[in-house]
Length: 268
Image 1 (cartoon, helix red, strand yellow):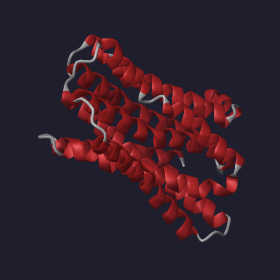
Image 2: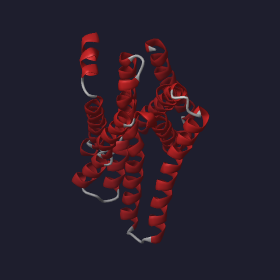
Image 3: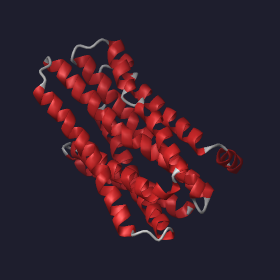
Image 4: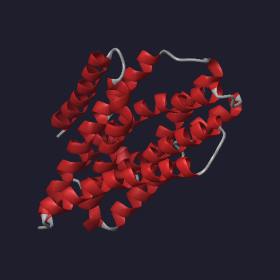
């Protein structure tokens, strides 16, 4: 295990970010492929996966992004409170603006009902996959500047797993409804898979930006944390809390948070 981690540390962070993005994309593809095997999935299982992922993402936003951003900003003698808080808020505003633009297009352009739903579903999830790709890029790119590269690598791997867990039900959340709306199995599968194609792209962009402009690292980390929290609050938690088993799902969110927190504490 240690030999494997040592080998990964010798690989350039941009390439590691690309591999992580490809992995999360692959999990989305597998989730989308469920439409080829099943016409419906057990919603409780999917919601448990989403809840665990939500907890992991919330925890990672603080332990893997905001907390290191504060430490790095302090090292640079920046106005830490301003850099971190502004990056966090702007990250949320980025997603808010994207959602508002999608809503504007849907209201001002007429499409057939089933096609309108497909566009909204695909564009919304694709938009929210962008910060996930950035988060991966930032996590792996920041390994170069971490005090303990091994810990930073393990944290990035845990974050990758958390995002991948979320991507599995996301893929089926697109392909299954599209098939029900009259799309062919092939088109439903392709659209569900392509919703995550932005993740390896933005993972590479995030890693390149972090490794080339180190001084921007605190802001970029705060930005991605804000965008990730916005995704959780807008997409994951409302859907989970509307379910009959919301108490169970809320507890699974806490378990996901605790898993990431324990890993950060033990490994740190």
